[in-house]
Image 1 (tube, rainbow, N blue to C red):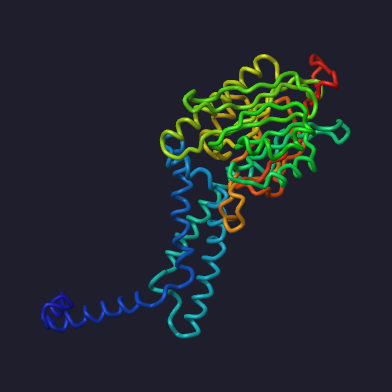
Image 2: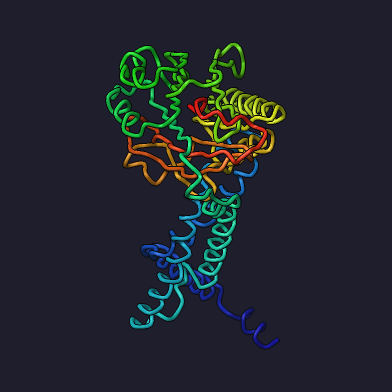
Length: 386
Protein backbone atom coordinates (compact mmCIF):
# COMPACT_ATOMS: atom_id res chain seq x y z
CA UNK A 1 0.00 0.00 0.00
CA UNK A 2 2.84 2.33 0.81
CA UNK A 3 4.40 1.88 -2.60
CA UNK A 4 1.02 2.48 -4.23
CA UNK A 5 0.55 5.66 -2.24
CA UNK A 6 4.02 6.82 -3.27
CA UNK A 7 3.17 6.19 -6.90
CA UNK A 8 -0.05 8.20 -6.57
CA UNK A 9 1.83 11.08 -4.92
CA UNK A 10 4.45 11.05 -7.75
CA UNK A 11 4.37 14.08 -9.99
CA UNK A 12 2.71 13.17 -13.34
CA UNK A 13 5.49 14.97 -15.17
CA UNK A 14 8.04 12.62 -13.54
CA UNK A 15 6.10 9.55 -14.73
CA UNK A 16 5.90 10.97 -18.27
CA UNK A 17 9.62 11.64 -18.29
CA UNK A 18 10.31 8.05 -17.17
CA UNK A 19 8.05 6.62 -19.89
CA UNK A 20 9.74 8.79 -22.50
CA UNK A 21 13.18 7.61 -21.40
CA UNK A 22 12.10 3.96 -21.62
CA UNK A 23 10.54 4.46 -25.05
CA UNK A 24 13.67 6.20 -26.26
CA UNK A 25 15.70 3.23 -25.07
CA UNK A 26 13.49 0.80 -27.01
CA UNK A 27 13.76 2.95 -30.15
CA UNK A 28 17.53 3.09 -29.78
CA UNK A 29 17.70 -0.71 -29.55
CA UNK A 30 15.50 -1.17 -32.60
CA UNK A 31 17.60 1.27 -34.64
CA UNK A 32 20.70 -0.85 -34.19
CA UNK A 33 21.59 -3.24 -37.04
CA UNK A 34 20.00 -6.65 -36.68
CA UNK A 35 22.37 -9.38 -35.52
CA UNK A 36 23.35 -12.06 -38.06
CA UNK A 37 21.19 -14.68 -36.36
CA UNK A 38 18.01 -12.65 -37.01
CA UNK A 39 17.55 -13.99 -40.54
CA UNK A 40 18.32 -17.55 -39.48
CA UNK A 41 15.77 -17.32 -36.66
CA UNK A 42 13.08 -16.05 -39.02
CA UNK A 43 13.64 -18.35 -42.05
CA UNK A 44 12.49 -21.67 -40.50
CA UNK A 45 8.96 -20.35 -39.99
CA UNK A 46 8.10 -19.77 -43.70
CA UNK A 47 10.01 -22.94 -44.58
CA UNK A 48 7.78 -24.96 -42.25
CA UNK A 49 4.65 -23.19 -43.51
CA UNK A 50 5.57 -23.98 -47.15
CA UNK A 51 6.37 -27.58 -46.24
CA UNK A 52 2.95 -28.05 -44.67
CA UNK A 53 1.18 -26.23 -47.51
CA UNK A 54 2.53 -28.80 -49.98
CA UNK A 55 0.49 -31.54 -48.32
CA UNK A 56 -2.63 -29.76 -49.53
CA UNK A 57 -1.57 -30.21 -53.16
CA UNK A 58 -4.60 -32.38 -53.86
CA UNK A 59 -6.90 -29.47 -53.02
CA UNK A 60 -5.60 -26.60 -55.13
CA UNK A 61 -2.95 -25.94 -57.74
CA UNK A 62 -1.19 -23.24 -55.70
CA UNK A 63 -0.71 -25.65 -52.79
CA UNK A 64 0.57 -28.28 -55.23
CA UNK A 65 3.42 -25.94 -56.22
CA UNK A 66 4.69 -25.89 -52.63
CA UNK A 67 5.10 -29.70 -52.64
CA UNK A 68 7.93 -29.68 -55.18
CA UNK A 69 10.66 -28.02 -53.10
CA UNK A 70 11.15 -30.49 -50.24
CA UNK A 71 14.91 -30.59 -50.73
CA UNK A 72 15.14 -26.78 -50.61
CA UNK A 73 13.07 -26.60 -47.42
CA UNK A 74 15.29 -29.26 -45.85
CA UNK A 75 18.55 -27.47 -46.66
CA UNK A 76 17.23 -24.07 -45.56
CA UNK A 77 16.22 -25.63 -42.23
CA UNK A 78 19.57 -27.42 -41.93
CA UNK A 79 21.44 -24.17 -42.54
CA UNK A 80 19.36 -22.39 -39.90
CA UNK A 81 19.73 -25.24 -37.40
CA UNK A 82 23.51 -24.88 -37.63
CA UNK A 83 23.62 -21.07 -37.85
CA UNK A 84 21.23 -20.16 -35.01
CA UNK A 85 23.23 -21.65 -32.08
CA UNK A 86 26.51 -20.62 -33.72
CA UNK A 87 25.52 -16.98 -34.25
CA UNK A 88 23.76 -16.73 -30.91
CA UNK A 89 26.79 -18.09 -29.01
CA UNK A 90 29.11 -15.76 -30.91
CA UNK A 91 26.88 -12.77 -30.18
CA UNK A 92 26.70 -13.56 -26.47
CA UNK A 93 30.49 -13.81 -26.29
CA UNK A 94 30.91 -10.41 -27.96
CA UNK A 95 28.36 -8.80 -25.64
CA UNK A 96 30.09 -10.21 -22.59
CA UNK A 97 33.45 -8.84 -23.73
CA UNK A 98 31.92 -5.40 -24.40
CA UNK A 99 30.00 -5.45 -21.11
CA UNK A 100 26.60 -5.50 -22.79
CA UNK A 101 25.26 -8.51 -20.91
CA UNK A 102 24.43 -12.02 -22.02
CA UNK A 103 21.22 -11.49 -23.98
CA UNK A 104 20.40 -9.29 -26.97
CA UNK A 105 17.05 -7.55 -26.25
CA UNK A 106 16.16 -7.63 -29.96
CA UNK A 107 16.51 -11.41 -30.25
CA UNK A 108 16.58 -13.00 -26.82
CA UNK A 109 17.46 -16.59 -26.07
CA UNK A 110 13.80 -17.62 -26.27
CA UNK A 111 13.58 -16.43 -29.88
CA UNK A 112 16.68 -18.41 -30.77
CA UNK A 113 15.24 -21.53 -29.14
CA UNK A 114 11.95 -21.06 -31.02
CA UNK A 115 13.73 -20.64 -34.36
CA UNK A 116 15.95 -23.65 -33.72
CA UNK A 117 12.96 -25.80 -32.75
CA UNK A 118 11.07 -24.88 -35.92
CA UNK A 119 14.18 -25.52 -38.03
CA UNK A 120 14.58 -29.01 -36.57
CA UNK A 121 10.87 -29.74 -37.08
CA UNK A 122 11.15 -28.62 -40.73
CA UNK A 123 14.19 -30.83 -41.26
CA UNK A 124 12.48 -33.89 -39.82
CA UNK A 125 9.25 -33.31 -41.76
CA UNK A 126 11.04 -33.06 -45.11
CA UNK A 127 13.55 -35.79 -44.31
CA UNK A 128 10.65 -38.26 -44.18
CA UNK A 129 10.04 -37.46 -47.87
CA UNK A 130 13.64 -37.15 -49.09
CA UNK A 131 15.62 -39.84 -47.26
CA UNK A 132 13.66 -42.84 -48.69
CA UNK A 133 14.89 -41.89 -52.18
CA UNK A 134 18.43 -42.81 -51.09
CA UNK A 135 17.48 -46.32 -49.96
CA UNK A 136 15.82 -48.94 -52.15
CA UNK A 137 13.55 -51.47 -50.42
CA UNK A 138 13.50 -53.60 -53.58
CA UNK A 139 17.05 -54.95 -53.58
CA UNK A 140 19.37 -55.08 -56.57
CA UNK A 141 20.10 -57.46 -59.41
CA UNK A 142 23.12 -59.73 -59.41
CA UNK A 143 26.11 -58.70 -61.47
CA UNK A 144 25.96 -61.82 -63.67
CA UNK A 145 22.30 -61.42 -64.63
CA UNK A 146 23.11 -60.23 -68.16
CA UNK A 147 22.89 -56.98 -70.09
CA UNK A 148 20.18 -54.61 -68.82
CA UNK A 149 17.77 -52.68 -71.02
CA UNK A 150 18.73 -49.00 -71.08
CA UNK A 151 16.17 -46.25 -71.58
CA UNK A 152 17.07 -42.61 -72.20
CA UNK A 153 14.57 -39.79 -71.83
CA UNK A 154 15.32 -36.24 -72.96
CA UNK A 155 13.05 -33.22 -72.90
CA UNK A 156 14.93 -31.46 -75.70
CA UNK A 157 13.10 -28.09 -75.35
CA UNK A 158 11.49 -27.04 -78.64
CA UNK A 159 13.36 -23.71 -78.62
CA UNK A 160 16.73 -25.43 -78.18
CA UNK A 161 18.70 -25.66 -81.44
CA UNK A 162 21.61 -27.81 -80.25
CA UNK A 163 20.55 -30.79 -82.35
CA UNK A 164 24.10 -32.07 -82.62
CA UNK A 165 24.56 -32.20 -78.84
CA UNK A 166 21.45 -34.33 -78.42
CA UNK A 167 22.43 -36.61 -81.29
CA UNK A 168 25.96 -37.06 -79.91
CA UNK A 169 24.65 -37.89 -76.44
CA UNK A 170 22.31 -40.55 -77.82
CA UNK A 171 24.98 -42.10 -80.03
CA UNK A 172 27.55 -41.98 -77.20
CA UNK A 173 25.21 -43.63 -74.70
CA UNK A 174 23.58 -46.04 -77.19
CA UNK A 175 20.53 -46.89 -75.05
CA UNK A 176 18.09 -49.55 -76.24
CA UNK A 177 15.15 -47.14 -76.23
CA UNK A 178 15.13 -43.35 -76.58
CA UNK A 179 12.16 -41.10 -75.80
CA UNK A 180 12.32 -37.42 -76.78
CA UNK A 181 9.81 -34.81 -75.62
CA UNK A 182 9.10 -31.36 -77.09
CA UNK A 183 10.14 -32.40 -80.61
CA UNK A 184 8.90 -30.50 -83.64
CA UNK A 185 9.60 -31.00 -87.34
CA UNK A 186 12.90 -29.09 -87.07
CA UNK A 187 14.10 -31.41 -84.33
CA UNK A 188 13.31 -34.53 -86.33
CA UNK A 189 15.22 -33.06 -89.28
CA UNK A 190 18.18 -32.13 -87.09
CA UNK A 191 18.88 -35.61 -85.66
CA UNK A 192 19.12 -37.73 -88.81
CA UNK A 193 21.91 -39.76 -87.24
CA UNK A 194 19.49 -41.00 -84.58
CA UNK A 195 17.10 -42.23 -87.28
CA UNK A 196 19.99 -44.10 -88.92
CA UNK A 197 21.04 -45.76 -85.66
CA UNK A 198 17.49 -46.54 -84.52
CA UNK A 199 15.50 -47.96 -87.45
CA UNK A 200 12.32 -48.46 -85.43
CA UNK A 201 10.64 -45.19 -84.46
CA UNK A 202 7.39 -43.31 -84.13
CA UNK A 203 6.89 -39.57 -83.70
CA UNK A 204 4.23 -36.95 -83.18
CA UNK A 205 6.02 -33.62 -83.83
CA UNK A 206 4.34 -30.45 -82.61
CA UNK A 207 5.28 -26.82 -82.35
CA UNK A 208 3.76 -26.28 -78.89
CA UNK A 209 6.24 -28.18 -76.67
CA UNK A 210 4.18 -31.38 -76.57
CA UNK A 211 5.62 -33.34 -79.48
CA UNK A 212 6.90 -36.83 -78.66
CA UNK A 213 9.19 -39.33 -80.39
CA UNK A 214 10.33 -42.86 -79.53
CA UNK A 215 13.27 -44.76 -81.03
CA UNK A 216 14.13 -48.46 -80.58
CA UNK A 217 17.36 -50.10 -81.68
CA UNK A 218 15.76 -53.51 -82.19
CA UNK A 219 12.32 -54.39 -83.42
CA UNK A 220 9.75 -54.23 -80.62
CA UNK A 221 6.53 -56.20 -80.44
CA UNK A 222 4.47 -53.06 -81.06
CA UNK A 223 4.89 -49.29 -81.34
CA UNK A 224 2.09 -46.75 -81.46
CA UNK A 225 0.94 -43.30 -80.43
CA UNK A 226 -1.81 -43.12 -77.81
CA UNK A 227 -3.99 -40.04 -77.24
CA UNK A 228 -3.87 -38.85 -73.65
CA UNK A 229 -5.86 -36.22 -71.79
CA UNK A 230 -8.44 -33.83 -73.19
CA UNK A 231 -8.91 -34.46 -76.94
CA UNK A 232 -9.00 -30.69 -77.46
CA UNK A 233 -5.28 -30.57 -76.63
CA UNK A 234 -4.50 -33.45 -79.01
CA UNK A 235 -1.51 -34.61 -76.93
CA UNK A 236 -0.20 -38.13 -77.45
CA UNK A 237 2.15 -40.42 -75.59
CA UNK A 238 4.42 -42.98 -77.25
CA UNK A 239 3.88 -46.66 -76.45
CA UNK A 240 6.33 -49.48 -77.08
CA UNK A 241 5.79 -53.16 -76.22
CA UNK A 242 8.88 -55.35 -75.97
CA UNK A 243 10.38 -58.33 -74.18
CA UNK A 244 12.91 -57.92 -71.41
CA UNK A 245 14.59 -60.87 -69.71
CA UNK A 246 11.71 -63.18 -70.51
CA UNK A 247 8.99 -60.75 -69.51
CA UNK A 248 6.72 -58.75 -71.75
CA UNK A 249 6.74 -55.08 -70.93
CA UNK A 250 5.07 -51.87 -72.10
CA UNK A 251 6.90 -48.57 -72.07
CA UNK A 252 4.97 -45.30 -72.07
CA UNK A 253 6.74 -42.04 -72.93
CA UNK A 254 4.76 -38.97 -71.88
CA UNK A 255 4.88 -35.22 -71.38
CA UNK A 256 2.07 -33.75 -69.30
CA UNK A 257 0.83 -30.19 -69.08
CA UNK A 258 2.45 -27.99 -66.41
CA UNK A 259 0.16 -27.48 -63.39
CA UNK A 260 0.01 -23.69 -63.69
CA UNK A 261 -3.50 -22.39 -63.18
CA UNK A 262 -6.57 -24.49 -62.46
CA UNK A 263 -6.90 -25.68 -66.06
CA UNK A 264 -3.29 -26.88 -66.32
CA UNK A 265 -3.45 -28.47 -62.88
CA UNK A 266 -6.64 -30.37 -63.67
CA UNK A 267 -5.38 -31.52 -67.07
CA UNK A 268 -2.01 -32.62 -65.67
CA UNK A 269 -3.81 -34.69 -63.05
CA UNK A 270 -6.19 -36.15 -65.64
CA UNK A 271 -3.25 -37.18 -67.85
CA UNK A 272 -1.48 -38.83 -64.93
CA UNK A 273 -4.71 -40.64 -64.04
CA UNK A 274 -4.92 -41.97 -67.61
CA UNK A 275 -1.31 -43.15 -67.47
CA UNK A 276 -2.08 -44.95 -64.21
CA UNK A 277 -5.15 -46.56 -65.80
CA UNK A 278 -3.12 -47.77 -68.81
CA UNK A 279 -0.41 -49.12 -66.50
CA UNK A 280 -2.94 -50.93 -64.31
CA UNK A 281 -4.57 -52.46 -67.40
CA UNK A 282 -1.23 -53.73 -68.69
CA UNK A 283 -0.46 -55.24 -65.30
CA UNK A 284 -3.82 -57.04 -65.26
CA UNK A 285 -2.96 -58.55 -68.64
CA UNK A 286 0.33 -59.88 -67.23
CA UNK A 287 2.74 -57.30 -68.63
CA UNK A 288 5.29 -55.20 -66.81
CA UNK A 289 5.19 -51.42 -67.22
CA UNK A 290 7.78 -48.65 -67.59
CA UNK A 291 6.71 -45.00 -67.59
CA UNK A 292 9.22 -42.31 -68.56
CA UNK A 293 8.71 -38.65 -69.22
CA UNK A 294 8.47 -35.08 -68.10
CA UNK A 295 5.46 -35.50 -65.83
CA UNK A 296 5.59 -31.93 -64.47
CA UNK A 297 5.41 -33.15 -60.91
CA UNK A 298 7.83 -34.37 -58.23
CA UNK A 299 7.96 -37.55 -56.12
CA UNK A 300 6.55 -35.64 -53.15
CA UNK A 301 3.35 -34.35 -54.73
CA UNK A 302 -0.10 -35.82 -54.23
CA UNK A 303 -0.46 -36.34 -57.99
CA UNK A 304 2.71 -38.45 -58.20
CA UNK A 305 1.70 -40.61 -55.26
CA UNK A 306 -1.71 -41.21 -56.84
CA UNK A 307 0.05 -42.27 -60.06
CA UNK A 308 2.12 -44.78 -58.09
CA UNK A 309 -0.92 -46.19 -56.30
CA UNK A 310 -3.28 -46.19 -59.26
CA UNK A 311 -0.81 -47.72 -61.70
CA UNK A 312 0.83 -50.16 -59.24
CA UNK A 313 4.12 -48.41 -60.03
CA UNK A 314 7.14 -47.39 -58.01
CA UNK A 315 9.62 -44.59 -58.41
CA UNK A 316 12.81 -45.77 -60.13
CA UNK A 317 14.70 -43.11 -58.13
CA UNK A 318 14.46 -45.23 -54.98
CA UNK A 319 18.02 -45.99 -53.99
CA UNK A 320 19.57 -43.36 -56.28
CA UNK A 321 18.73 -40.09 -54.50
CA UNK A 322 16.81 -37.01 -55.60
CA UNK A 323 18.50 -36.69 -59.03
CA UNK A 324 16.96 -33.32 -60.01
CA UNK A 325 16.53 -32.52 -63.71
CA UNK A 326 14.99 -29.02 -63.98
CA UNK A 327 15.90 -26.20 -64.47
CA UNK A 328 19.20 -26.99 -66.21
CA UNK A 329 20.43 -23.43 -65.76
CA UNK A 330 23.63 -22.98 -63.72
CA UNK A 331 22.62 -19.89 -61.72
CA UNK A 332 19.30 -21.57 -60.78
CA UNK A 333 21.05 -24.62 -59.35
CA UNK A 334 19.56 -24.14 -55.85
CA UNK A 335 16.06 -24.48 -57.33
CA UNK A 336 16.66 -27.80 -59.13
CA UNK A 337 13.80 -30.27 -58.74
CA UNK A 338 13.10 -33.74 -60.22
CA UNK A 339 10.46 -33.23 -62.95
CA UNK A 340 11.61 -36.01 -65.31
CA UNK A 341 10.80 -39.51 -64.14
CA UNK A 342 10.91 -43.23 -64.61
CA UNK A 343 8.39 -45.44 -62.84
CA UNK A 344 8.37 -49.22 -63.07
CA UNK A 345 6.10 -52.08 -62.05
CA UNK A 346 6.94 -54.73 -59.49
CA UNK A 347 8.52 -57.22 -61.91
CA UNK A 348 11.28 -54.81 -62.98
CA UNK A 349 14.54 -54.17 -61.17
CA UNK A 350 16.26 -50.79 -61.56
CA UNK A 351 19.99 -51.30 -62.05
CA UNK A 352 21.03 -47.68 -62.47
CA UNK A 353 19.46 -44.24 -62.73
CA UNK A 354 21.48 -41.15 -63.51
CA UNK A 355 21.17 -37.61 -64.80
CA UNK A 356 23.37 -36.95 -67.83
CA UNK A 357 25.13 -33.87 -69.20
CA UNK A 358 23.30 -30.79 -70.36
CA UNK A 359 22.43 -30.70 -74.08
CA UNK A 360 21.11 -27.14 -74.25
CA UNK A 361 17.64 -27.86 -72.92
CA UNK A 362 16.16 -26.54 -69.70
CA UNK A 363 15.95 -30.21 -68.60
CA UNK A 364 18.81 -32.61 -67.96
CA UNK A 365 18.53 -36.02 -69.69
CA UNK A 366 17.54 -39.00 -67.56
CA UNK A 367 19.06 -42.45 -68.16
CA UNK A 368 17.83 -45.64 -66.51
CA UNK A 369 18.99 -49.26 -66.77
CA UNK A 370 16.35 -51.91 -66.16
CA UNK A 371 16.15 -55.66 -65.87
CA UNK A 372 13.13 -57.92 -65.71
CA UNK A 373 12.85 -60.41 -62.90
CA UNK A 374 12.82 -63.97 -64.30
CA UNK A 375 9.40 -65.33 -65.24
CA UNK A 376 9.08 -68.96 -66.31
CA UNK A 377 5.84 -68.32 -68.18
CA UNK A 378 7.16 -65.47 -70.33
CA UNK A 379 8.73 -65.86 -73.73
CA UNK A 380 12.51 -66.01 -73.72
CA UNK A 381 13.17 -65.10 -77.33
CA UNK A 382 16.25 -62.80 -77.11
CA UNK A 383 15.72 -61.43 -80.59
CA UNK A 384 12.63 -59.61 -79.39
CA UNK A 385 14.57 -57.50 -76.90
CA UNK A 386 14.91 -53.93 -78.28
